[in-house]
Amino acid sequence: MKRRVVVTGVGMVTPLGHDAESTWTALREGRSGVGFIQDFPTDKLRSDVASMVKDYDARAFLSNKEADIYGRVVPFSLGAAIEALRMAGLDHPKAEDEVPRPGGTRLPVDPSRIGCFMSTGQGAVDIFEQQILKSAERGPRAVSPFFIPAVMLNIVSALVSMRYGFMGPSYNIASACATGTHSVATGTLMIEAGEADVMVVGGSEAATRLNTVAGFGNARALGRSIDGDPAKTSRPFDKKRTGFVMGEGAGALVLEAEESALKRGVKPIATIAGFGMTSDGEHLTRPHSEGVGLRLAVERALARAGIGPGDVGYINPHATSTTQGDIAEYAALHEVFGDRLATIPISATKSMLGHLLGGAGGVEAAVTALSLRDQVVHPSINVDELDDAFKLDLVRQERRVDLSYALKVSAGFGGHNCALVLGRA
Image 1: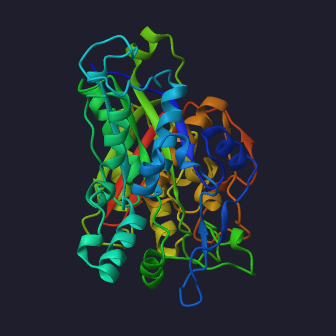
Image 2: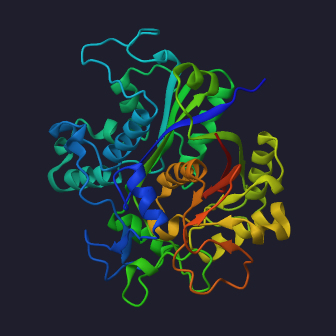
């Protein structure tokens, strides 16, 4: 019999808040984290906006030396993971001289049964850029000896495991903008398969640099500020959407076997009832025009959860605000839900946070879990005129709901699709 997986903690570091509750409050209030790019000139770029984390203190859990070595993605990820573990009652770092061993009494769960998939799609882009420039200007001997570990995609999972002495499965899962959601799905699979009792999972990104903005912009994927207002740029499903807004941040969830949570006396926030993972098998950057791969992911998630389309009471979509992406996603969802899709509350987190790339799925899965906990869904903003192609119940202001199950979907460059069904705890 399949083990039941529950969510016992969530954590977030986003442009709207340095923790889960402040981010959740801002989303419910319909606030935007999008602003003009300040770190580099944008006059020759196709986009002038981004959604950035401001005034985050990396030295809260990193030494001065570590804060200089690692890129922005590391403190965001660590902050989200530590918050999620604290909420789950598992924030018990090991002593500096402690040698990790199976068993022990410091943690309420055997550390050899705890793993970590805190993933990133692009890693420390800022450090990579910094060290390449240093080599070009001063020669190869100027490159930091910490360059390679700092830019490894698995650095965050490694640092979380090292901080706590976790000895379960630990690595990075990279699937572009589906990274965080795939990490949740694969972490769930690890617990269901008996490979772990607890998994710290999620996604993170901090890649808003001149060259990444140039690359996405030249691919015609990014939007520009509207009427001089950056907050209006991200507008999923709106008739005048022109592209996504690059964002940064991290979202983490602590997944746990239900019997482990019950044994510890921890009240779950939500359940991970099912997941589906597929590929389009068609194009490197463009989604399948009919959304076939994403549809299959949703159908598999529902089947794994043992529910039908009629049981889903809320959808947190991928909804990037690109012309083709929103159309393909709508096609996939309409194939699954039919005309009932027009009656299911839908709200796009990216309308306020922008697109956190590899971090998006982690944050949005955590947001969906909080929606189930509080029986509230946040609004979508900037939908002045719903595109005629869509018949949707797009939530315009915070709404009280009666949710048993919610759907979270993500898609990434490369044709990677992932769907999660979360349930009320």
